[in-house]
Structure formats: C-alpha cells, structure tokens
Image (cartoon, rainbow, N blue to C red; front, side, top):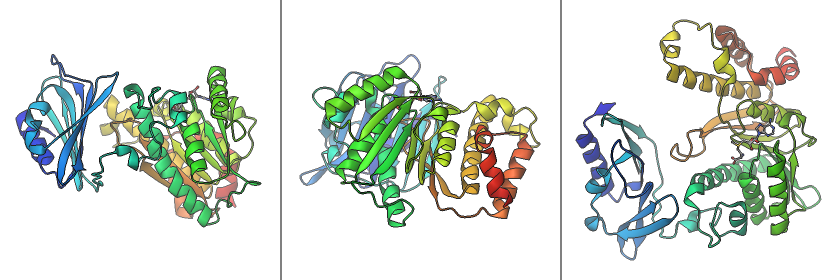
Length: 401
Ligand SMILES: C[S@@+](CC[C@H](N)C(=O)[O-])C[C@H]1O[C@@H](n2cnc3c(N)ncnc32)[C@H](O)[C@@H]1O
C-alpha cells in the first residue's frame, strides 16, 4: 500500500520507541539521489544493567561497528529520514516494512506474527555458530579476528537459520524412529547437494558434531575448484575423516545413500536433481531451499483462465511460476510418502530465496484426493515439472498401486 512517506516514517518511529515490544530494525538500500552513512544498519534492544538500550550496528561494506544508546538519546526520526530505501521494523506481534520508491513513495507492508525479543547483549550467546569458530574463519565467513565479514553476513545467517531448522527436525525424526539413532559404527549420513564453498556443509558437520552426533558428511558440487578448496579446508580443520567432497553432477553422483539430503540454493533444476537423487537414495529427511526457477516459467504458455489476470504481469507470472514449481515439488514428495511442509527458513532481508521444502519420509500411502489434486494441477497448467520427469517411475508406482 502506498502512503505518504512522512506518515510511514512516523509510524516506524513510534514502533521503535516502544522498547518493550521492539525486536529489531533493519535499514538498507539507498534512496534515489541520497547518500547514506553506511550500507546497512541493524538496531535491536539490549538490556544493559537496569536499562534497555538500543544497539546500533553499522555496516559500511568492510567493517561492522556497534554502539549502544539509551532510547532517549537516539534520534530515530533523523536516521529513518536519512536516505535508506528499505526500513524493516519487527516487533513481538508483527512487522512493518517500508520500501521507498524512486519517486519517493512509501510502499508499506504490515504483517502479523510473533517474533521473539532477545535482550541479551552478546548476540553470539544466541548463535549456534560462534563467529570465531575456526571453520567460519577457514571458509571465509569470518575474518582472521573471528568477526563476521559484512559481505558474508547474509550467508552466515542463512547457514545459521538453516541449522536452526535442521537440528530440531533431525532430533524429532530420530525420536520418531524415521532416522536411526546415529552411533560411531553407524553414523548419520548427510549429503549437501550443490554445496559450492560448503558454508552449510561445514556448518552442519561442525554444529551436529558439537552436539555429540556421530556423522559422516558429503558435499557435492560440479565445480572441481570448490571441491579442491573444500578438501584443503577439511584437512586444515582435521575433520577429513568425517567430511568429504566430490566434484560431480548431482544427477550422476557416485554417492548412493544418505539419511539426510540438504541443498541451499542449488541452481534452477539442480534443485530437482537434488530432490530426485534424495528420493532414489532413500533419504529420510530432506531440507531443500530452492534457488532460481526457470523450468515451469518457460512452460507457461497456455494460461488457464481466469489466471491470465495474474500472468499478464511479468513480475507476477514469475512469482506465480515459482510458487507453482515449489508447490508441485512438495506435492510430488507427498505422493511419494513424505510428510512435507513449506516454510520460510530465514527473513527475506537475508535472501529473497527464503523458502524451504522440508520433507520427512513416513512411507504413508498417498491420498486419492492428493493424487487427483496433483493431476488436475498439471493438466490445468499444461506443465510437466522437471521433478516429475526425474521421478516418473516412482510416481506411477506410488499413485497406481
Ligand atoms: C548458488 S550456489 C550455492 C552454493 C551453496 N549451497 C551455498 O549456499 O553457498 C549453487 C551451487 O550449485 C552448484 N551446481 C549447480 N548445478 C549443479 C549440478 N547439476 N550438479 C552439481 N552442482 C551443481 C554450482 O556449481 C554452485 O556451486
């Protein structure tokens, strides 16, 4: 909704002044013809001695500095009016997001939902991965002093939040008997598909190992350079016995079995390769955060009416085909005996690709209604999802017997 900029900023200032409910503020981007004093500012309330302060973390693209202010000393109106194009204010009961357009209009989104207010001063206390963990320094997320590099802070948060979902989901799956209790002789196997520089691969290894879980991790990426770099890092960290890297196409990987399959932003249909491989390899748990989607978008030529009111706008057609792709991926997994949910694994300010398909194998037979829904959906849109092609035999078997 577009409203007057002054009104939107006043609303944000009022929310920031309520330190009992404020969770955090993020300022980023630059308004047209305006300069900002740094690339991004994160603000959050922290308890210091008896008083709540506002911790203001400024990031200039090279380094991060933090200062604490009493709310009475802090001029949020001046800061919010100083040229940032995106303003996000999260409170315990919801959030306000303001995007200031090139014309200076305020596009405002208000959402409901619960956010936790964390007032501890040292953020690291709430982190699964400490910024000074040697693996973060080796992979290049932290600098040599153990401080997260500003250019890598989004990737750090993606890994951190991914693990925040992986850890409890894994625990539940082990408790429910869907995954065996890992032991030294029979460790948990995890495969990261399209691992790239292996931030997540190493993160999963280090974090789960620190939780006392015996495990064996494999990272697969088509790029030999990534494999060679990751192997060197594994040796430096002395963990080469329980983590390995292979330079292979996901669809042709020589890895044949895994308990857990993870993929963070494997490009386009590499995500379908990852899901198909996980199903073929009898993975019990899949956590897949897809990246760009091109497959279905190029297939959407005959639009079933009245959906053309959406698809006639390029932007919405793109979003619609992204949703359709992921909804069909989730439904295919459901038809193959997985319990599936689709969640946001991280806030959109760290990556626009923040959707995650989480699937746990239960072996349940698919519902007739679910089979019908899937068939009607692909018939209506006249599409053949890349994943359906890769899992054609499995789909026929599970939906006809
Ligand atoms: C956007 S990067 C993400 C890397 C990593 N997961 C992360 O989040 O930092 C996607 C990675 O997938 C790899 N990739 C793309 N298609 C692949 C395929 N078919 N087989 C193996 N790796 C692939 C690319 O080489 C690239 O490293």
